[in-house]
Length: 164
Image (tube, rainbow, N blue to C red):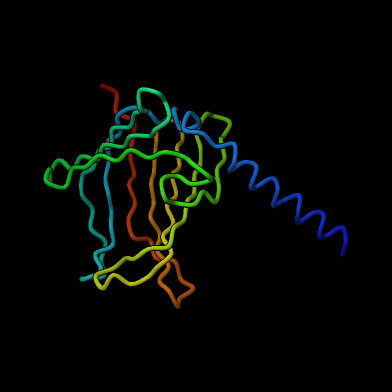
């Protein structure tokens, strides 16, 4: 029993220490222009809908913020820009639950936050998963509504590095 407790504490320490050491610069390999699609679950029809989407990623001038400029070629009124900072194990307002750097310089970042989703604005746990591989980048939002155990894929960006 004592060995099990020690092993559990060691694993928890490793997980929390990797989240603590996470910095914006760890995301720098994702900087650039990305082109692809956004597929989202239309709650009204219950069916997925896919549209063109591009994301331009940069860092703030002082390298402390992560800027994501979202562009929707067929729906430019939906274009937006977000700047996210890391503080106290948070990526913006989302809790960092996992961060791993891969051998090829990519990464996996998983965050969670309690919030609302759906047409009825139901309370839910929202999980965002960012995965960078050499020339591909995906961002997935999963939703688990209060009172359920099932995660639903709400939306997913599948992007390729644009070579301008």
